[in-house]
Image (cartoon, rainbow, N blue to C red; front, side, top):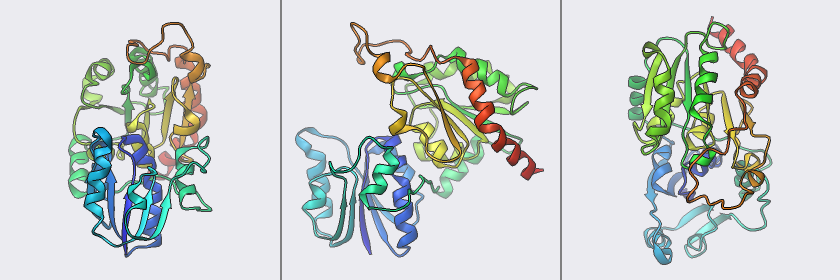
Length: 326
């Protein structure tokens, strides 16, 4: 059974589609899958069983990337095509079954639920990750054994949706204090290349013996494997947040100028903290432009609010995990 799975060029959206792929492989363990996606999420799919080919799409003018994809897949007789991009490609190749994202899907619901609706599933498949041996080895080198680890993602691809570094520092200091949820824990700080300046102050605030530097290291699949070794994750709305959640890590996502109803970390082990203002309210001022904006829009999300949410949403998970480990 040959399956073409067309998903996002963006890391977060790609990860949110992994639940659908996981469902497909559970239902059809004999399937041989080709994934078409962007470069950023491509390494995330490398560890999936039965993914035999990954076609990386780089956006080009005049839809050139779609033409190139069509040329790559037109010669195959596909048993199934799952297209989360609503592209012409899925309609212009031979396929016995087609599941295509369409305007009839309720786009006000979470992206994971939208993906499930493409295949008309009764249940919602939770995003899930699989790792290659080399990705696991990267994770083991970066995060060695030796007690609990808190993962933190203090950066994002747009400064407007980054919580101030000093706020992260205050919450982390509480988390690893004697009164915190993870006294004495190590802290692994992650950020993508180009986001070093946002993440460095947080890393440097951690006592040297407890800090793990994951800033601008590894491909997204490597980083996701490292995140899977964390006991808790806190970070801005980003691909890293979705990777932690999909890896099964208790995850707190911080939201301001973005839409949690679409992009909250997904699963019973996840929660969010958000500014009192909505996205639309935060950007409703004269002269706003996302291209020239140079400061955080999340300053109204207070540290104590985040600490209180962690206590409320994660203390039970933490205590259960600690009891099991003992």
